[in-house]
Image 1: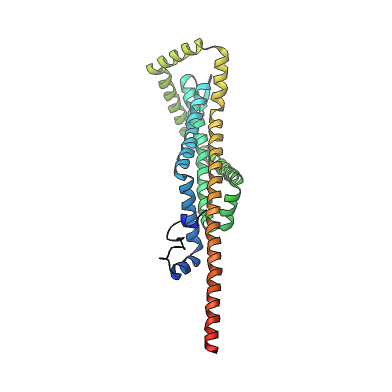
Image 2: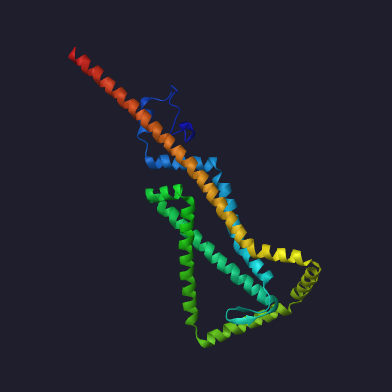
Length: 276
């Protein structure tokens, strides 16, 4: 890898005449943080980091929606929403909302933990090295921390719910019941449900069974796909960053040694001149 590829200001083409000893000395004494910054920018550009981040974020963001839709479609019979038993389309919608909310909470926790890890890595060489050398373990650790965060959040919500007054609980259950009845009696909902039932009746059983399996696994497949896409990209980005950084540091060392040899030779010549 050519060092001049990583920022013209930091790694100039030293074979060109326009570069003086001052340029070389500036490069030799370049700040390590600046070298890392430019190496990272180089890695981001080579691996098209913005594009891959958008792909990963889109995949992860769609998981709660897919999970909610799958849960709603697969729901049969009654369900419980905010302590109120509901049935029909309202039960499907309720389950969809609950499932989507759980997935959103989990992925939101992962995102927060990941952000905290990135902030920590800015000031910690050991954290940066671990994240770069072990992207999968780093991701697993982030997921584990996120699960603990989500668990603590759910416990906090349950605790808050346990402190509600009986009158408040009754009011919530009443509102949920009214909302469920309004959904089930809605003309559009009734029409859509009837058309869907007629369509399902015409679909062969093997296809329906396969569709159910695929629906139940859809969120997991999407999540796993996003994870492996992210891990693969981060591994490539880390590899390019490491090579770029090491290339510049090696070039610094070479020039530093050459500069010291030059200064030593100049010093010897000066000493010989003085002796004569």
